[in-house]
Length: 367
Image 1 (cartoon, rainbow, N blue to C red):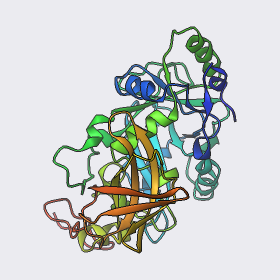
Image 2: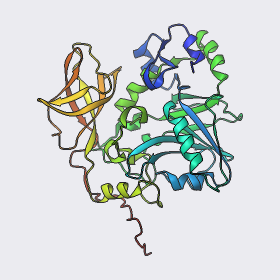
Image 3: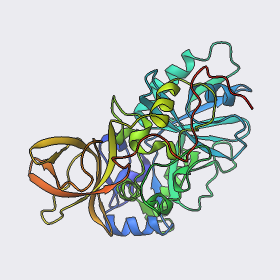
Image 4: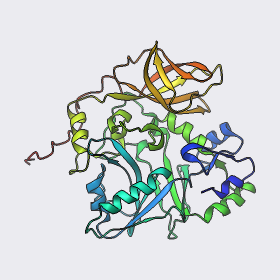
């Protein structure tokens, strides 16, 4: 559905997974700076919102997904993944509980299939599920957000990517993780609030940034996004998603065997990299663009943006065996673009060392 904030003067509509909201409001670089400084709001009302109510909601969701959710307190946040039996990522969800219900923020394309799956898996559990996308919208900001929620009190999800979640581990090589610069917060608000915000923005009382600004900061923070980085083969280790969305010391869930095996014993077949792109031709590769090392295709671009400080950047998923210092080209319809890697998941990222080890399924644990 189209957001009322697209009526704000200067708004340019986004496409792809963000269709229905503004890509920018005519000043992309300034909007990025305002967002990074914590002054601007981003309209994410294209995202899906699900609500789970009932006494069994948290332990039941915990049993299905990758994050420990039992004991999540009112106002606390988490991120969790729904994996298939082979450990591949099917859905990612931002989770916040208000003491009465658990709210899930998901990609627009995930809302219907995820709700259908959860409904099938409910069985006798005391859980009621509803799609609240039609009456609940999502706003994003860095740092503070104090918008009234669907039931009056503020309902805000805090992204664990900035610090890493309890029970998770990062395989990123950087001593200072760039995720620390993305203290993202999502506020759930009544959808009617968007019309008021549009009027306030038109009068200069609220500063807005488009989703392009958030995407640029996300890419620079190496933050994976379900609508962009995952495909039919993605496992969490390839994207460093054990940092925020997987608890390495919890009970069984679908796909855990693969998570444990790769974490403890193996290496993921692919790895996420940031690409610093040659900006001399002003060509920004689209998601899906082939990444080449010489004549060989070694991966695909998943996200790209123009960063207000770093220029054109991208995330790509490449073969693990690709040398970390290999010169790369990204193929586009307008010609090849030179690219340099910034290592996110190292090529040598392998068996877990000095990090929590997942127990084997069925193993007896002695204390």
